[in-house]
Image (cartoon, rainbow, N blue to C red):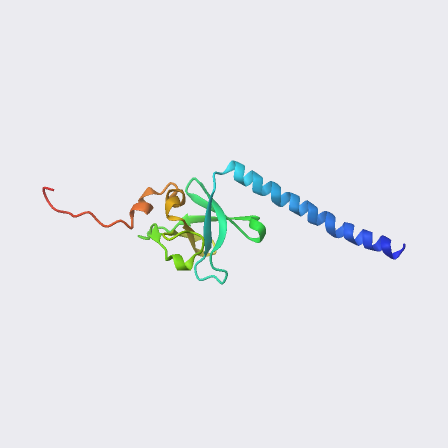
Length: 148
């Protein structure tokens, strides 16, 4: 076989699997977006090397599914930290870019440790999902006086 034939064969063996993988990635992203109402956020493992990365999340029952991994191929399930008084908290805008001047964050638990998920202040209702009390936990306490 001439050298040009080997080059064509090698390119075919490399390009066809890559094209199939790209097609599967695109199909998975479209299906995920259509089936689950998702929102844009920044998420990352607390104390992780990578820090916060842009991704999308979607609530399914009481679990937040966050796209992670290479090109967002994996879904990481995050659940609220049980027994914690931590709820929705303001985050310093210097720590995250592109989220405006008043970003808010929520600590969630994954199989591999604690995660921080941060959104713009106006998107806080999407971040709290089914946990309305998490949004109210950072408000000041009401005065407790009799007869008022």
